[in-house]
Length: 375
Image (tube, rainbow, N blue to C red):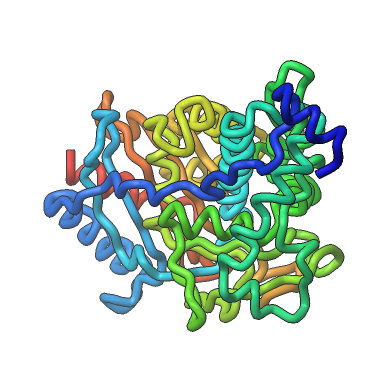
């Protein structure tokens, strides 16, 4: 340390050794508990769909998770059908990107609080210097990937966050706009902006630490995002999970974990209450936005007004081309769809269009049949 730095240190103007903080959260609790009545209702609704479409019993290929969240306080009664199956879910995985962005903001705020003597102009450079080494090797599949570098693994803090002279840390206006555009009209280019700001290792490290994926050297289950939605024109994909519907995948998940994430958001329990409220606002805009929920289309169709939160997914079969057939998926918070006063988080995925089951009529009917029998 120089004499000048010694003097600054003496007067408390600098801190020589920044204090590291936890880069990631502890695992979030599971808000669900299995419910036999709801499970029986879902099983019957699935069987009805097979009969309606003249399909062999037991072959329904669409994972489902339904949980009643009416009380607003966990544990929530839940039913699942193949709900731990990992599938390619396309743009539905942008919810996971949004979550990781708020975790990054929370981490930088923790770092600033733990190091109050670091000036506002130095926070972002210091957090990179101190924290990156703590999480850069957190995800085995990304460490082993030969087609990416640390530029793709670590955050670009200045492109995500701004620190005011008063020390207030928040998303830059550009990044806030990208988050909104990624979720509401589901812009792929804005998703790339969000993912490039986070880096694959922070993004998937946050998912793993939060309990949304289980990652190891043999593979991962749960949620996984290691692509930038630019169809190979941006960062290279890291297909770190094997999906049941489309082989090695860069955007994958399970209905159980997608439903869990949205349920935690709806109760203010994901990241922190303020972050949950901001994520909830974005998903609420998506529910009422230009892309109406899949299950609101067709007949019977659940009216758009009944969707409180929503994020749909649409992507091609075959890992990379841009055309039919397409996979569709969706996670929603729905209210008053059957009996008034009841709310449910619903996630489904792996509807192949064209296919024997439709993303609008059949999905809405399974939901309505389940709720009708349960309520």
